[in-house]
Image (cartoon, rainbow, N blue to C red; front, side):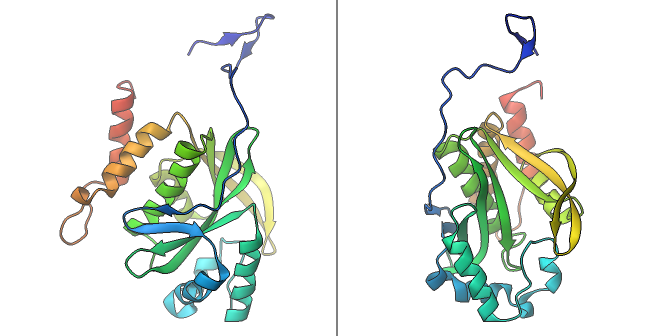
Length: 246
C-alpha cells in the first residue's frame, strides 16, 4: 500500500480533510424482519425480560462473563433496568421478538466517541430463547447498520473477556476482525480480566451489509428453518466480490 508522506518525508495515515465529528446515537427504533430494537423502557420491558432471563429458562453460567447479574429476584433486576434506562452511555436497546411482541434480550452502544466516529456494541444480554437464532443475528445487524449507514461512524468495536469463547466466536462470525488482547484491562466480579478486542470499520461495511442481507433472506432457509449457507460463507463471498484479490 502506498504511504502518504508529510513535508518531512515521514509516513502518515490517509488524509481526512472533510472529517467532522459525528452525532451521538439516539434512542431510535430499528425494525427488521424478525425483531425490533427499541429504546429500553422499564414499564414495557422489565417483566418480559425478567421472565426471559429467569433461572428456570437457563443456567446461571450465562452471567459469568457479564459485569452484572445474576439477579435472584424481580426487585434487583428491576433496579438494574431502571439504571440502564437512565443511562445515555451506554445507550440500551431492548430486542423485541416480532412474533410474540415480547422483549427477549438487551444490547447497547457504549463508550461512544463522536469526535473520532467510534462506538462499541456491549452489554449484550441475549436470553436463552434468543441465542443462536435468526433474531439474534438480525439484532446485531440492525445496530451495526444504524452505526454505519445512518450515523456514518468509522469504527465499531466489540470487546469481551478473552476467556469468553462464545463471545469471541460470535464476534468472528459477525465479521469483526480480531485485533489483540489487552492484558489486565478490567477488574470485575472480584477477578482480573484480559480483554479481547475486535472491530468492524467503515470500509468493511458494504460487503458485510450485503452478506447479512443475503443470509437473513427467506431464500436462505428451508421449510424447517435450517440455513442453506452460513453467514461466514456469505461474508467471504461478499468480500471477494468487493475485492477479487481478497
